[in-house]
Length: 74
Image (cartoon, rainbow, N blue to C red; front, side):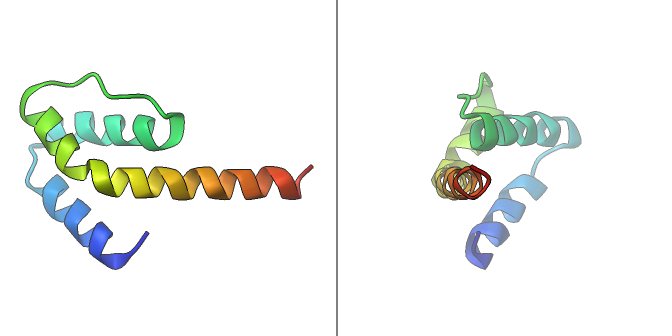
């Protein structure tokens, strides 16, 4: 994760209401860690789509680290 990605992520997420933040944050976690496409609509989906390029990088990094850990642990 680089600083520019993190700052942009925070900027976008901070603009959300608390309720939308929780929904989008859950969608982000499921997308990055469980590889599940989100089931959200409206402005929440728009927000997620703005974040998707960052999330794809994070997901790729997570997969790489997970693979390395699995190889190290046998």
